Image (tube, rainbow, N blue to C red; front, top):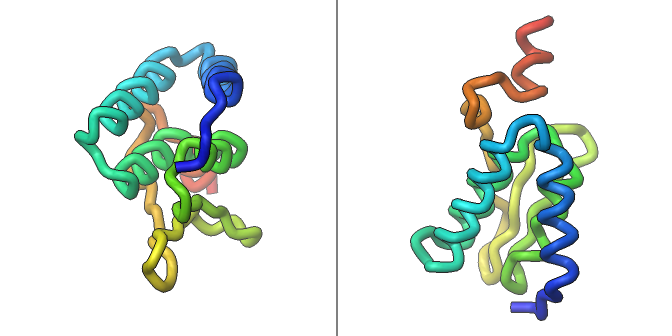
Length: 118
């Protein structure tokens, strides 16, 4: 795993907290996901899926999570706006991430709101 500086982690946490200041349950869910990842209750692909789904619609936070991933793993978001995917070291191709659930507070995320308005 690449060296993670404490300053980087704190800056990312501040970004999450600021983005979801009006919805603290999102921030708290992120902390829970990270605790489970650190204690190895969920694996790297699992944490990628959960965080990408939790932060769906927020490109900066989804891509910023790459800082926490082991070497070789990388979340990417195509320019065409299709859903995010990730690369796994030693495996060809990519794994698509399909956020299908509303956010934690049962409010539709931005993508779902746009689809409902169309």
